[in-house]
Amino acid sequence: MGDYRIPFNRATLTGSELRYITEAVERGHLAGDGDFTRRCNAVLEQELGVLKALLTTSCTHALEMSALLLNLRPGDEVIVPSFAFVTTANAFALHGARPVFADVRSDTLNLDETQLGELITPRTRAVVPLHYAGVGCEMDAICALAEERGIAVVEDNAHGLFGSYRGKKLGTFGALATQSFHETKNFTCGEGGALLINDPELLARAEILREKGTDRSRFFRGQVDKYTWIDVGSSYLPSEVLAAFLFAQFEHRDEIQATRARLWRRYVDALGDWAAAHGVGLPHVPAHCEQPAHMVYLMLPGLDARQRLIAHLRERGILAVFHYLPLHLSSMGRTFGGRPGLCPVTEDVSDRLLRLPLFHGLGQDEQDDVIGALLEFDAFE
Ligand SMILES: Cc1ncc(COP(=O)(O)O)c(C=O)c1O
Image (tube, rainbow, N blue to C red; front, top):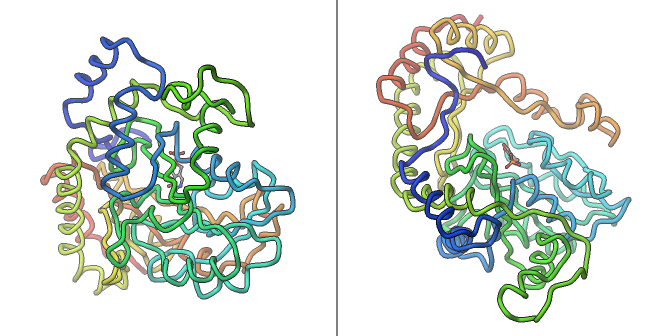
C-alpha cells in the first residue's frame, strides 16, 4: 500500500483493547467461548434483536457455516450479487453449490430485486443479499419472493452492522446473516466475524458445526456429561484474546458510530456541489434505510477519470481504493457461466467506483486535506 500520509484505513482503537486482553490472559481462559465471547455475542443479540449470535473467526467462515447449515449438495444453486467480495460466492462454491450471479441496482449497488425472480430455478437453495456500504437491500421484496419460492435468505452484512431497513436492523431478515470484524470494518479484532441466527431450527446445529462437529457447547453448559463427534464441522470460534479486543470496541459502539457518522456526513456535504458539477455520484441512501457510515464512495464518470483521480490523490499522499472486480468475469466466475454482458451494471460501476479514507481515527485536518484535494481535481475529460 506504500507510504501514504493519509491511508485508506487505520483500524479502530478505543484504548481499552489491551486492558481487556490482559484481563483475559489473567483469567487463564484463552480458547474460545469464554466470558468476552459471551459478552460480544450478547451485545449483538441485544442490539440487533437476533435469536443467537456466534462469534466466528471471520465473515468468510460465517458464510461457510451458512453453506453447511443449508446442507448444500452439488448442483444446488445460490444466488449472489456479482458486485461482491470473493467469499460471498466462494463460501457456497466451496460446499458444492453453483453461484448464480445477479446484477445490482445502479443506485444502491445492491442486488437487483427486480431480477431475482427470473434467476430462481428448481435447484435454487438460497439468495445472499449483500447490504452494500451498509445500505439495506430491498428486503421486503427479497424476503417475500424467497418465502414464496421456498429458498433461504442469508444476509451478507459485513458492511452493515447497526444499519436498518424500514426501522428493522440489518441481519435480522434472513434465516442467517454474517458480520465481519476485519480491520477495515467499523468494529474490529483484526480478523473476526459473527454468524447471526434467526431461524431457531438452525441453532443447535450451528453450535455443533462451529465446535468441530462436536456437542462441546452443550457440554460446557452442563447439558451433557461428555462431548463427542456428532456431525461434520470445523473450528470456527475465535480465541478469547480476539473477543476481548472486540468487546473493547463494542463497549464504545455509540461513540464509534457517532464519529463515523459525522465524518460520513462531512464528506457528503462538502463534496455535493463539486460532485454535481462534474457528474460524480455520491452514495445513495433511500429514505427508508439507515446506514452505519461504513463507507463513502465516489461514482466517477469513467475508468480514466478514476485512474487520474487516484494518481492526483497519491501525489498528495492520500490513498483511495476501489473494489469489487465483477465476480462473474473472474476466472472462477467464468467456470460457473459468467461472461461479459451478464451483469452490465456490475461491469459498469466496477470501473468507476472509488472509496475515500473513512475511519474512526481520521482527524478533521486529514479529512479537510482529502476534501481539498478532491475539490481541486477537475480532470474528468
Ligand atoms: C461484503 C463482504 N463479505 C464478506 C467479507 C469477508 O469478510 P472477512 O474478511 O471477515 O472474512 C468481506 C470483507 O471485506 C466483505 O466486504
